[in-house]
Length: 217
Image (cartoon, rainbow, N blue to C red):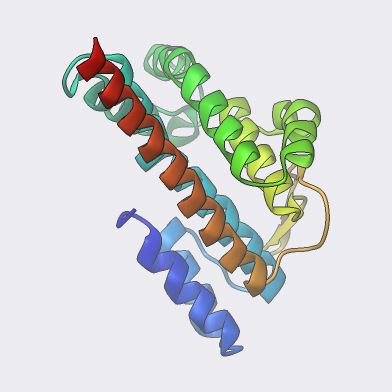
């Protein structure tokens, strides 16, 4: 959680104080890209998306692979696949190479089960019906389908609109619509924190039950 929690908290505090320049600066530092010209709603939307994605990639998916494979093998495998996928991504070279194609395919296989596990947990601890509906109807429209499943389920669980076209400088980034309900604001950011913590408690409960089962076995 320390990979991203302080960024999210500081942006939330800046938005509550109506300090948009500070919120833009914090978001740009977190995401590594300019955030000039973004409004409060867009900052809240991107922050919630980034927090849901980070909680999946840094916590929940790692926990699942830690459970599935012996020792730390699963956790190390998942994190290595994530890092290599980012370093070899086609977007860094402008065209797909053998390395980027290989890393994308392998990570897609490794990510298939964790993305659905995280989406299921978000649905269980949030608005189940909306989460499942958004997962089934919107997740595949996201550029990165495995992450789209997680974000769509999280948006449905929160009852908030994520995704949607986003104005970046003079260009408009076309992004699929995710979620149902109201546009995002700072209060939805706090709801996002609650969703992630409830999901964490459920994951820890599952770990505890697995530990009890191993003792009984």
